[in-house]
Length: 107
Image (cartoon, rainbow, N blue to C red; front, side, top):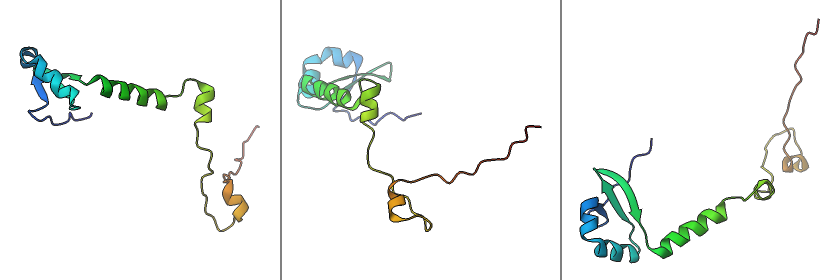
């Protein structure tokens, strides 16, 4: 379970205080400081500037593949380095698993 971040008094508001001083809360958010609002002592919402919110949306959209093809194309194409005394340099570029078949009794 993740522990909640520690909030400073400058950016943490109880709901009733946020209602009473909403203009100040919005001004602080527009300055680029996210404003955290609590309800009954628990974190409830965060107020962000429109620019910060749009940046979060752009960042999330850029990182999320839209489908299977895009997901597969996003996989890194560099081979994983593999070090072994028995392999050549050419083999190191394309690592192989050393698998041994197991014996199965079909009787």
